[in-house]
Length: 213
Image (cartoon, rainbow, N blue to C red; front, side, top):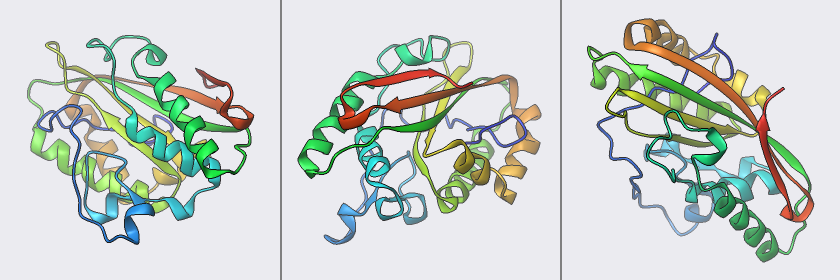
């Protein structure tokens, strides 16, 4: 869940059901403020919408609909691997529903492609990932975390959507992330980080998903 190779990468937990929809009970007051933005549903893993701008909160809510649309997402082009048109259509709907204009905003995305070693301890992998995720959420600006399940060759994809690259860098500076980084070589036969920029135009009328430069 980081922005560069010096920081921790998302680590996928194959034991969790792919595309699962966790359920957590919140008070009527909190359910409009805190949303589930990852497979983890403990309170420290929830996203506080009150910490975001109007545009960031709308995208975070719309990203609850994010899902893979092809089986080979581990190796397929990133933009073609998810239902981005549906997500962005939801941003536009939510914007119109709010009655407040959506101003052009860019967001930072990390895609972590990996191949897990057959010897990897999934329980340890999951513990590292969960701790790093809670740490990243606390740092702020972490809008979405998604990961799939390894394919027959143990290749996988995990992705993080951040408010900005600066937020991603800050989110990867804690001890839990450093610990996960230290375990990377022992857990992965291969890993690669791709960076992307998602720009949503005024009023969410258009959007562009491109490689980060």
